[in-house]
Structures are given as structure tokens and as C-alpha cells.
Length: 395
Length: 165
Image 1 (cartoon, each protein chain N blue to C red):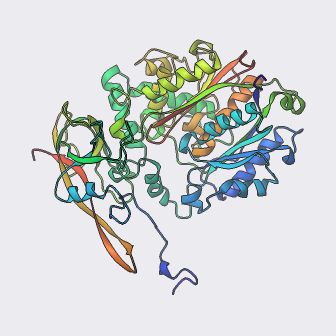
Image 2 (tube, one colour; image 1 turned 135 degrees about the vertical axis):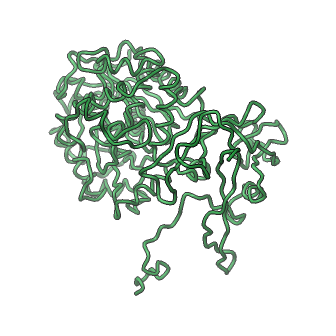
Image 3 (cartoon, rainbow over the protein chains, first blue to last red; image 1 turned 180 degrees about the vertical axis):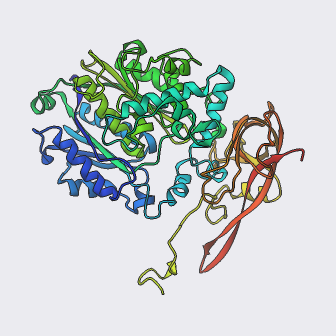
């Protein structure tokens, strides 16, 4: 029996930002936006729910979150109903798992959703709660749970070894903010000039305000369905989940897999497997959503994903190769820098944008986009997750 | 005023866990690491069967799954490869400057490089290549149930400081 193909057919998100709403409220907003995106689909058609959220237990005191959300959305899953915890890559992990469930025949139509309520109930607590997000007993006691110092170290290393500049980092921020202007659900939702980016207040040297994504409340959801059901449910072009990978080679900083902090060996491992499963190469990718939690992250991802040579990610971005008319348009809906980053929801926002690009209905449309890739890093750069999409299935 | 049904909270918002490890032997099988640390020793586990030294310490060998592990010493001095000084947005429980360094423990160490915190060092003083040495300090104790009693469990942790002041 041949494996069936899985397709992404609909997606939606809540407004992202500092929200006057609970996790369960925002999950409903995202679920409704997702169902509104596919009028033929009814809640009871959905037989699986995966909900990606890492801080539901800590910040909402709600573990086993998935059945709560299924109940609020009027879903009655019979194949799977589970919460996924992969921090910043929870959304892309949910998509990969939904793909596997649908391809195996265990589920027919899965809602892959996710969200975080981080500002609760006292806003400052998030700076404390994030200390739970890394290898707790060994790195958290050094105050490393909040990402800026780690990515500042990474940026210093990249600048030292490869000559990357602050202007190159700012080029990433300016590109992504300006993509995000057309996304009303983005947290920042504002234009950014090079002058503003370079004159922004310091966060941790060399990173300034617009090099860093904000802390965000929000939710998002997409629908993954088997190819035959997808054809019944939508008249839009089908978007296939061609391949993917998730690599975790270490957990604690002492076991970092690269030669130095700007050498992301684990991303190369994930990319190699993702391209192989999708039967594509970096040159085939028409549009990408990469994990720009910091401007420097996107720079290194451009290199390790194979879009440019090692060390040239900054120059690649500054030369406009991530713009709509560049070699690989990247983060065309604003990315994490503009949209914000409710950890479990981010991968679903990326998947939704890729679906729209490949269906030809994105706001910042890449002409004739046929193949696309999404990437998340998670934790203190411990896992890399990639999903590869196409308008054709893998033959 | 007590909170009906949750008397243990005593009107306080419950911050139930923190970033410091729970180190007591009643809770943690690698408690010798912390006992050694209290004596100023930086240690980890070595497999008695295959010889692999692992960091952080653990209760099985990740290479051969043996449970026969012994404690060995790690270097207490290293060299700063890269560092950052965080002045603003420092997490609760830490003070600015919060200095993080990527430290090289040397070729002979089973642990090559890792991230740690540099303390006892003013902002602007540290340089790449500086030698730093282990420093052990007390962190807040926590209540621990031992049989029918609640005792305060003392805790320590470590960072690095400039070798030459």
C-alpha cells in the first residue's frame, strides 16, 4: 500500500501581542480564523487535535491543555488529542506529527494548533518563567533562560570570524518589519528604517531593540488533511507536506555540537535530512520562513540552510537576496521580529504563510512559488525543525 | 488574611520553583556533585566500565548504559573565548552586569567548552583570553519534607571569576 500524501489546506491566527485574553480565549480565536479559511470544513470533520504550547502549565496552570481547547472549539477528536511541548518549534513539530498521522492513515483531518499566554498574571513573571526553558539544573542557574545574551554571544562570534556588521543585522530587521506592515495581526506592525534600526536602544551588545523579537501572547492553527479529503474540502491549489526533520544533538551548552557558537552543526544535520526526504535542494526553494528570533539567527540560518555560503549570510541579506525579487524571499509575513513569538504558535504562522504563498494568495506574494521551507530553532539553540512544502507531492 | 482552601500560600503568590537545582539527596541522585561543590571541588561522573566522562553528571553512562559511575575532578580554571555583558532586562534573581562567557576548560578536560557566568567582575573589565577560576556561592535554601518534618535544604551553585583581580 502506498503512503498517502498530506496537505495543508487552511490556517488562521489570533491577533498577536500583549493581549487582554487568556490562552483558551486565543486558541478559540485562532481556531475560528482557521475554520473560516475553509468554508467546507466543519468542526466535527476534524478527527485529531495537536496543540503546541510550552508554558500552558507554568503560566496558565493548565496541563493537558488539548481536550480543553477541543471542547471550546466544538471538536471531538477520535484519532489524537494531545499537547506538544517543543518550545519555539512546537508548531512545526505539530505539523510534522500531523503529517505522519495523516500519511499513516491513523488520522484524516488534523488541526495543528498552538499558543502561549506569557504575560500573566503579573507581566514581569515572564522574565522569571523563561528560566524554565533551558537545561534547568546546568544553564538556567547562570541566568541563561532569556535568549538575548546567548544570541549576543553568537553575534559577536559571527562578527569576529566572518566580519559581519551591525548594518547587515539591521538589514534583516528592516526587511522583516517592512514585510510585516501588511500583516494586521503582527505584534509590531510598523515600518522600520535603517536609521531607526541602527539608532535603537541597546539590549545586549551588539544586539539592539530591533534585532530581537518581542515577547508575545497569541495562537495560530492550521489544518492538515489527506490528499483525497483535501480535494473535497478546497478548490485552492493543493499544498503538499513533502518532507521534514527535527534534530536534537545536545541539551546543555557544555555539549554544543558545533566548533563555535556561530557554527550550527545541528541545523546542517536537520537540513540534510529535510531536503533528502523532500527530494529537493536549497536551490529549489522559492520562499522560506526561518526562525528570526534575532537578526543574527536569520543570518546564520541562511548559511546553514544552504541559501548562501558559510559566513556570507549577513552580506546575502544586506544585498537584498531575502527581498521579494531576491534569490530566496524570507519571512514574507514579517517573521518573528515583526509578528512576535508566542512559542508554540510560531511554526503554525509560518506554515500558514507558506500555504498562502504556494496557493498564490499571500499578501507579499512570491511569483510562481512552487517549493517552500519553514524552519524553527528551539530552546537555547538545542533543536532545529524543518518542514518542506510543494505544489507537487514527492514522487 | 488567609486564602480559604490554600492556607500554605499565606497570602503570597506561589512561586513554586526557581532556577536553582533541588540538590538534596532526598530529591536528586547526583547530589554528590553539590556536596563536592560545597568543598570547592568541580566534579562529574565517569563510567567505570567504558571510561566515558560525561558532563553534566548523570546516573547512567550515555555511551554504554552502565550504572557503574564514579566521580572525577574537572579543571577549576579556564579561558574566556567570547563574552557578553547584560546591563538591562536581567532575569529576576540576577544583578547587572550579568556577564556570560563561553569558557574553554583546556585540551585535557573532558568538558571542552561551556557557557557560564562571570561574577566578582565590574562591567568593562573582562577581556577575551582572560583566565577565570571557579567560584562557589550560597543560593537560597528551600523547605524540604523529610519524613514528617519540614527542614530547610541549603543550596550552593558555581560561576567563574577573574583569576587575577
